[in-house]
Amino acid sequence: MSLNLTQLIEQGVAGKRVLVRSDLNVPLEGTTITDDGRIRASVPTIKKLADAGAKVVVVAHLGRPKGEPDPAYSLAPVATRLGELLGAEVAFATDTVGDSATSVVGGLADGQVALLENVRFNAGETSKEDIERANFANELAALADAFVSDGFGVVHRKQASVYDVAKLLPSAEGDLVSTEIDVLKRLTETPERPYVVVLGGSKVSDKLGVIDNLLGKAEKLLIGGGMVFTFLKAQGYEVGESLLEEDQILTVLGYLERAEEIGVEILLPTDVVVADSFGDEESARVVPANAIPAESLGLDIGPESAAAYAAALEGAKTVFWNGPMGVFEQPAFAEGTRAVAQALTTIDGLSVVGGGDSAAAIRQLGFSDDQFGHISTGGGASLEYLEGKTLPGVAVLDEVTPIGGLG
Ligand code: ADP
Ligand code: MG
Image 1 (cartoon, rainbow, N blue to C red):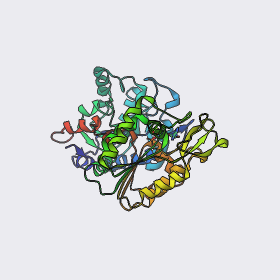
Image 2 (image 1 turned 90 degrees about the vertical axis):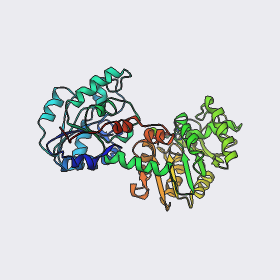
Image 3 (image 1 turned 45 degrees about the horizontal axis):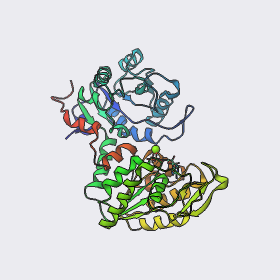
Image 4 (image 1 turned 30 degrees about the vertical axis):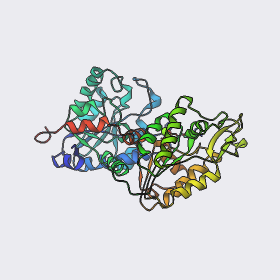
């Protein structure tokens, strides 16, 4: 068992430098943060440590820079927002492990918070070479006396600031990671029934593993988003220019057969909102799912399907939803996602929304976080857990037992 945050704090963190890996990977337009959900989710762990008198050193990534500094991916705007949410200024280091980081961390008073520049500005962070990651992790570890893993969105990655650094310092789970793991356990170990899973979004092959693992656990599986068209094609229908993963057709066919055998209902849309080209709202129209015109592409589930999905969710005691039903970013293709979100708000039981875009969708559509049981901050990590995989960034914490308190 890994240490939790409370147990770490009980060891006495006052005056100690605690490195916290957070997930602050927020959407930016220029330097404007368009959804600060992940920053808000990171605040409780940081605040708890600061209140206990720790010198809190936050490390995080933003986007996918190529292992070297790139101003477009600077965390500077995030430091400002984090400071606003904490109600105290956050010292920002303009590098991750260099002179700026050393001096900023060295200058922290007890209870103060610093944010290091984008950890992915360093090639060692995501290197496939164990030795390169270990070297970089050593530099990170030199900045701290203890490590707290709180970036749930990255615990499925074997990266230096997630995995390797945990081997070098006394390590604990942050509250965000603990909460996420608790919820995922409730979804996999003893879910209350009926249990309905809703899957959508654009990354079809990413989500097939979840179908594989949850097919035997849930009563119903509702399919939306880009995945729809691989299923429709597998059933022999034409899908025009819609998203399609030809190489997954056989896999999908296998799921349909297995579902039939074990009596699990897989719901597919019976109608689809199509357009002449991606994002062309002018041409949006509803067609039957088995008659998608060759020159069009499907961008949302249709109104009949949306109503059927809402009905299928009625009375569910456990719901896991990952992936928008359509291209919710545009009003003409957002109604399917809205219907599912609306149905989730009426669930008397556990409703979980996973995935960055799904969380953004419910906020954009005007729902508030507290209308749902739990909004997960980590799409990929939740999916890998639900696929039955081990999360390296959590497993590594189990291996480390701090002896005799913090040095
Ligand atoms: P999440 O981040 O919640 O896991 P994904 O990243 O898998 O979700 O997918 C989100 C994206 O899927 C959204 O940007 C949305 O526009 C897109 N999407 C949904 N339905 C379709 C569709 N039919 N065709 C193309 N893109 C779609
Ligand atoms: Mg996404």
